[in-house]
Length: 581
Image (cartoon, rainbow, N blue to C red; front, top):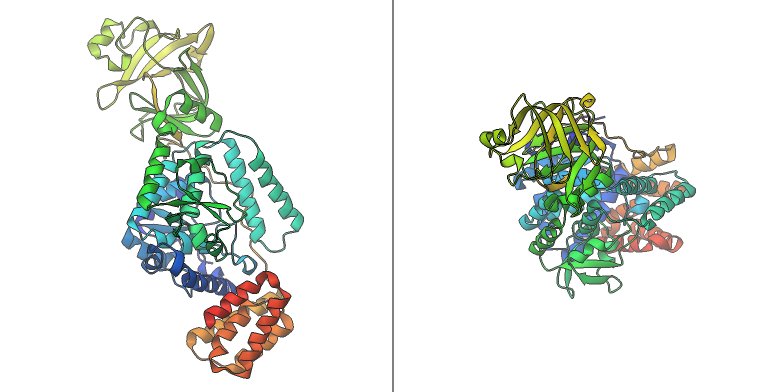
C-alpha cells in the first residue's frame, strides 16, 4: 500500500493541525468497478453539463487535469493545479467544518478519496472523489470563483461553532459512511438517520459555523448562477450528481434570488434540495459573504463575541484593543450595567499572543491553569493604563518592584507587587505582571497570591473573538479522533470474479483490441452469475454496438430486460445507451 502523499509547494505551508487530516490516496485501491463508475458519471455529466453548467466548467476539467476515463490521481492534479495557484489533498471522508474551511483559506482542495458504490451512482451523501474532484476542482479555474472560495475559507475558519455543531458533524459523518458501506443492516442505517433527524429538529440558536455552513451549501455546493429564468450550474454537489443536475433544472425545484437570507435556510444532506439560490455573478457571492462577515464576532468582538466562545466550549481567541490576543477555552465573563466585559476567565492551557505570534514566556507552560484578567479603565483616571508612558505610570504610583493598589471603574480591585510591563510595537502597554497579588470584586476573590504570578491583560475592550488559537503552534497537537471511521468493504470470491471481468473489458477498450470471443465469454458469465450487474453489460455493448452483430443485439436485449426487472435503474441504462448511440 502506498504511504506517500503527493506534494505541491502550497501543501508545505500547511500547519500541523491541518496536515493530520491528510492521507495517501492509495490509488491502487480503486477497483475496476470504481473506474467504471467514474467513467459513466463523467461521460454523462460532460454530455449534459455542457448545456447547463457555467462556462468555466468544461475548461476547468482540462485545466485541472480531470480525465473522463480515469479517476484522477492527486499527483496529476497537484502538478496541474499548481499552475493556477491551488493544490489538492486526499482525506478520509468528512473532516470538521473549521478545518475544511481553513484548507480552502490555504488554497487547498480537500478531496475525499473514496468513491461511491454502483448502487449510489447518481448521488451519495458521503463526500467522494466524484463530488470533490469532478465537482469542486473544475470551477476553481475561474479566477473570480477561486478567490471567493479562498476568501470563504479564510472567513469560515474564524467562525465560532457550538457543541451541537460537533454532535451534528459526527452524526452526519456516521450516516454517510453507513450508507456507502456494504453489509450494513437497514436497522443500523435507520438508527443513524433518526440520530441526524433528532439533532436537526433540536431547537438551538444557530452558531456562526452553522450559518456560514448554510451559505457554503447554497453556493459552493448547490449554487446556480445567471438569471432565474436561465440559470447555470456551478455548485459542486450539482456538478457531481447526474440525478440532481437534471432535477435542479426542472420547475419542481424553486429558484430564488441569492441574498444573505440564505444563512437561515437549513438543508438535508441526504435528500435532493427543494429550492436553490441563483447569484447573478461570482462577484455578488463575495458581496454577500462580506455582508455576513460583518456580523461575525471576528469583526464585532464585545461581550457577544466572548459569549459565543464560552458557549462553544472549544479553544478560541479574543483580541483586545491593545492587540493582545488570549487563546484558550473561555469559561466566564463579568459585565457591567452597560453589558461591557469587565472581567474574563479561561480554564486549562492558555496562551498570549500578538499579531498571531505567541509572546515569549506566555505559552501553556506559564498559563497551564487558565488565565483571568479585569478589563476597562481605572477609577478616577481619564488616561487608560495602556496609553501611559513611563512618567504617567510613575505619576500613578506604578513603580517596578513596588506594591500598588488600584480600582477599576467597574469596582474590581487589584493589590500586589508590580514586577514589570510589556508593550506592543506601537508603544502601548499590553500586559503588567504582579506578584503576591489579590484581585477582588464585590467580595469575591478572583485571584489570590497562592495562584502564582498575576499577569493582567490591558485593553479597554474586546475588538475581536474567533475560533481557534491566534498562533496555531501554541497548543500541543491532539490527534484527531472521531467516533466513526470509514468502513472498507470486503470482497467475496464472486465479487472478485466480477471485478476481474470489469478489468478485462477495460483493458480491451484501452488497448483497442476488441476480441468478440473474449467479450462473449465475459457476457455469458455475467448472465449466469451476475444477474444484477448492468454497467459491465453497458460497457460491452459500447464496444460491439457499431458492428450491428447478433451479439450486439443480444447484449442490448439483456440491458432492456434488466430495465424491465429493475425500474429503479432503468433510466441509468437508458442514459448509457443514448450516450453510446
